Length: 532
Image 1 (spheres, rainbow, N blue to C red):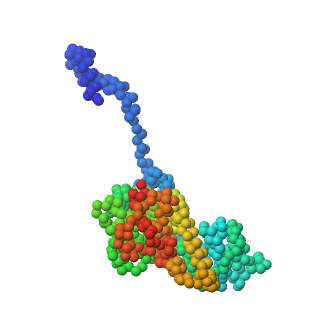
Image 2: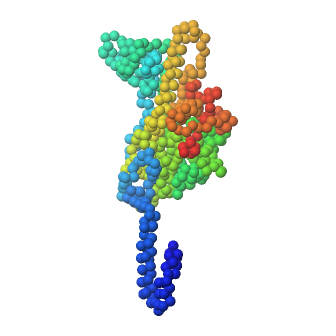
C-alpha cells in the first residue's frame, strides 16, 4: 500500500515540478519530507486501521497462573463445568521455608458407598426377624424387615423403597401392643398407603435381601492412569505415549506393584488375563481391605495409525476417576479427555527445589465436574508431599472417595435410581412368588429355581458394572441422558476377550441387567466421536 501511494503521489504535476526544478536536497530535507509523508499516510489510513484493530488477550498474570514460578497443574476448560482444588485464585506459598509433608494420615477417612447397606446383615440375620412385601400404588414395590431386640426392648425396622432404604429403631414402650407391618412402615414413611403386607416365608429370603442391600457395596475399584509429557495438551497426544520414563515408573511404584496379567487371579478390573488382549502388565494394589486395579495408558495396547487409541480409551474412558501424572510444566485441561463416565481427575507433578535437591516433592491438584460434591481427604496447604508413604495413603484414599462422590452426580444418580428400582422390583417379585410356592399354592408348585433367584442369591458385583450392562441392553438409557445413541455391533465385532467370557461381568448378575438374546449389544467404550 505504501508503494502504490508513493507512486501516485510522485506522478502528480506538483511532484514532477518539484523533482525537476528543485536543487539537490540535504538529508535534513529528506527527513522532513519522510515525516510529512508518513503523517499523510497515517491520516488517510487511520480509519481503516482502527476498523481492523482487535483486542488481544491480556498476558498471563503470574500471580494467578503460577505457583511459586511454575504453571499450575490444572487449567479450567473454556466451557466451564468443572471445579478445581486448590482454586487458581488461591495463591499457594511454596517457598523453601514452607513446611510441606502432607496432612496426618489418620484423618484420611474412606467414604462408604452406602452407610446403611450392612445393617440388615449385622442386626437382622443373626436374630429372629420377619420380612414383608407389598406393592404400593404410589411408591411401587416395598420390602419391609422387622426385628424385635428383646434384650434392649427395641424394634428395629428397615423399609426398602425405590428411592432409598429407611432405617429406624423404636422403643417397645411406645406401643401398647406390637405394631403391625403397616404401622411400622408408616412410621418410617408417611407416604405409604398400602392396607396390608404379605409375609415372606421363603427360606432363602435373607440371602436375597442381603444381596439387594449390599449391591452397591464393593471392595474393588479400577482407575485410569494417564501420562502427560511436556507440551502435550490434547487427548490424542496424551494417549499416544508409548514409553515410560524412570520418573514415571517410580511414581507407579508408589501406587502399587506391576503384575503380569497372564494368569492373574485377583481383581482384574476388566483386563484380559487369558489372551493378552489388554497388554501384558498392569499396576495392582490392595488397600485397607480393598483391591485396586489401575488402567495404565502406557501399558494398554498401542494401535499404529489410530490417533484416538480406542483400545486404550475403551478402558480409561469407561473409568469414573483417572489419575494424571505430569512430566513437565504443561497444565492439564479439565475437559481434554472426552468420556461419558470420567468425572474426576487427580493430577500429580514432581517438582524440584534448588534448596532441596535430595528430596522428591510431589504436587497434587484435583478437578471434577461441577455436580460432583467435594470429597476428602482435604488437600494440605500447600498441596505437596515429600514422603512416599503419605502420598500413597492420600492418593488412594482420594481416588476411592472421588469415585464414591462421583456416583452422586446427576448422570449417575439417575441411572442408579432406575437400576435400584429394577432390582427392588425383581426382589419383591421373587420373595412373593417363592413364599407362595412354599405355602403350597398349587399354581406355583412346579416352579423351578430360576436364573433370577440364583443371580440374586449369589450376589451382584459393583453397582457401576450393573448399570453399564443395563445401558448396553437398553438403548433408551442414553436417550434419557441426552447422550447420542451408540451404534450397535454384532457378536462377531466384539473383542475376542469378551466373546471368550472375559468381559469381567460380576458374579450373580440379574437377568434383566445381563446380556439377553435379541438385545442389541452396544459398544462399551466412550470414544471421542460420541461426545462431539
